[in-house]
Image (cartoon, rainbow, N blue to C red):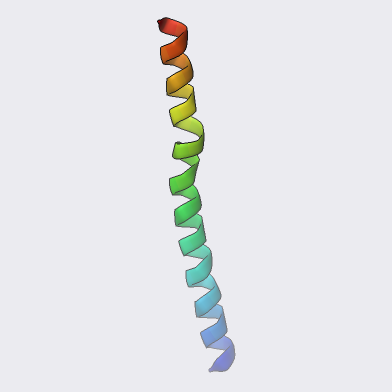
Length: 42
């Protein structure tokens, strides 16, 4: 039971980290690209 609890804890931690990381990628990648495109067009 204890190993099963640790596995479920690490899987939930991994999925929460993956979700937050996937949320951070657009903030770090897409928005600067849009800002660069706007500066290039103007």
